[in-house]
Image (tube, rainbow, N blue to C red; front, top):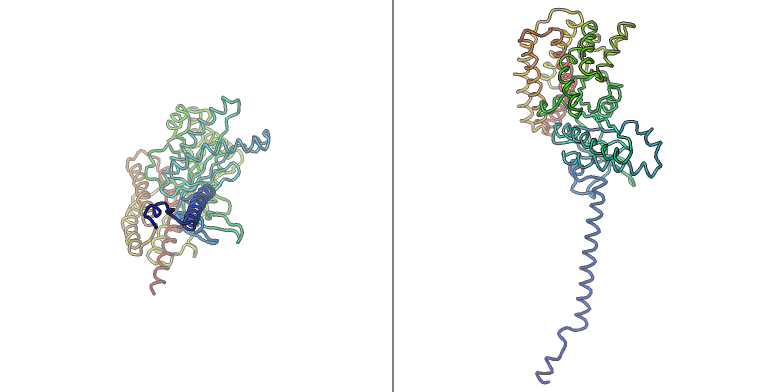
Length: 461
């Protein structure tokens, strides 16, 4: 065979060409399958956010199993459109869906920018979770209300009525996990903190407010001075024995309204305290002054009506907590002797304090604050050292609560030492601080740590 003939032979055999064609098709099929998988995962991420999977220690949706659960401290948000039922009755089903989606599409990016995770949409309501800080949740809620103004401006230009929403925020320990059956499961968040948040959101309807937070969220804020807050009421959730303090955040009010509420802030908070102390003769003129400063102050109007009703019927729309003195319960036990002894002593002080307030006795502020200063300076470092020793995962949050309690206590002590405050008002605000602290920290957060400690000790034995 001549060399020229060798150059004329094909470079590949038909068999080789067939293999290359097959490999090419396999690569294309693999790329298409990968693209489909990526699209599918992206679609699932819109149903189950990656951030929620991360909270559950799952890398992707395929890692999630029925019954998975993890405990977290979160700030929970509920946001709901006011009078949605009557509004929806004027629209067709298609218009309803278009309206809901247009509204939710405005709120979702705002929540995401503030590190929030939308857990679920419940009709026109939003349930969102904030893991990083309570500040994210409050700032996010304020930003949502700002965005609502922008959205309503567009509705007005299109000839539609503006809408109003109410937002409730609460902070606490919850369980995040999956529930359901073999063929259908869903992620959910369970805990008292969730139920309380829903009730807070509903309370906006009573007070005609836009944003309410619990004392749990207030005490978890790193920068409470960033927000315009006023103590609004003592709030009792149905089925719960211990009330809690709730606060109005009014950053989103119009400028003149904000200034009016700031001007009447001290009067309003004093009047609320006097009402709960049943000192109606002191509360009533202060509420009247608040309304003179801002005639449309709905909470002040509600309290004024309560004052008139009390004068006419002796019915007091309060929690009655000053009349029902707390006693130590077996359920308060943590199992850690040093904690239980400190908690019992604190409860004894609270009971003694409530008795003095109820009987309008003189207040030994020096003795009370000396006890509390000694309590915080000895008890708190001991707890924190124990938590570090046993690697408590919520040490940072627990320590932050300690720090904020001390700050609020010192602020009250400074006002008391100034000598120009009504002792009964300072006594009442101190009482609220202690009641909220005992119910939320002593018998919740401390018991949570005690369970962790007992579990660690059990595992090591």
